[in-house]
Length: 444
Image 1 (tube, rainbow, N blue to C red):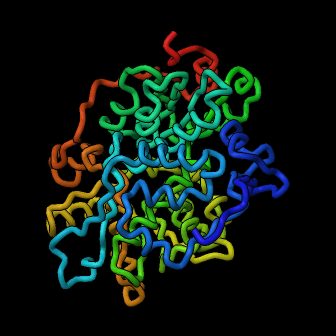
Image 2: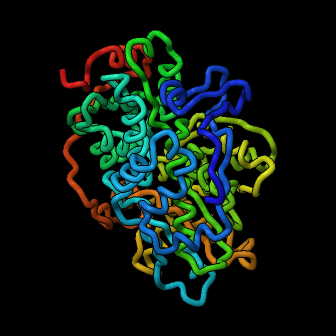
Image 3: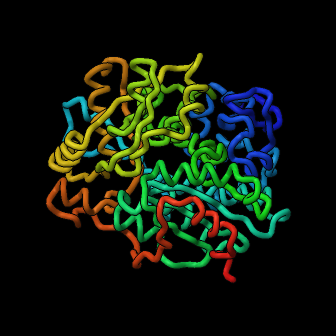
């Protein structure tokens, strides 16, 4: 980085007088006066930052990117250990074969799904749990990490928290809408994990999590920490993705980035990287039919809606959490666009890519691939490469593989999938409250 940054402090997107330290943010995920926490200062990278880190390991690159946010609070040695532990799996950039001589030869997939839960959320959640343990562990002997999930966040949270002394994960997920693989990852029985199968949508789960986080009587019993992307630590942990993609391309490449987007944390992380000085020529949030973002960017009207199940289930979000952050970093900064890709186009992209190259996209990455094709058709003369964030292993979605290819086993999951054992509840906040007030998950 070009120069030392001021001490880490956060401010609400809704009220500039509402500020907090990292400890404050971990203990109060939602600012008291509304909005979301963002850093008060965005550090700037040196012009040669990418070149200087071209040969570094991913863990070393990530450490350099997030150091201005966390090094002063955690200490350089702790930050280094954290990054080495959290980012200990490969992050390859692959170009599916079969496209030579076509615009699609410029599309590459950044595979972010080689961590323990086989989804990109591993990076952020593994960072969050380690930061939380360092900042709050001595002060609070029992910590509850609370999350709503439409699929991948819950798996990453349970993997990161399971077996950690003094920490339990309480995860809410919609009974209909997650795949069998995802449910096994979220809800299989293990120490430190309480999975709640909710009779409702992801938006219902998310609303109950927000209600719990705002409930003073619950928070007085023990800290409630959110692992959802409203927690800024999670978003900051994803900022290195764009830096990593950039350094894997030829020097001087005009890079576009397409991010499959639901709650908008990942696309917000790329926009934050741009505000730090990373050269990204185009940024597209690729959404499914549930997202209000394309309409907002086109008409200026924000109309959240009740999410309906789609093939890209982890993006089935009709009122995205991170909108205020994305808008804050978009205002006065580089342009961000948003597009909608429906299920027909998603399944078609999965088939076309497999037919051309043998490469299998998960449905979310397929949304991104279709958006990348359209970006090249629209602005191809301005771009040398388009990087699509590959968000999850395709084998997590056997039902979609069956629909796309007639073969649920077209891709094989790389791990064990025991039977899930959730607590089934209605769309009922009082049931969530009872779990949070109990000792469930703490091993008693």
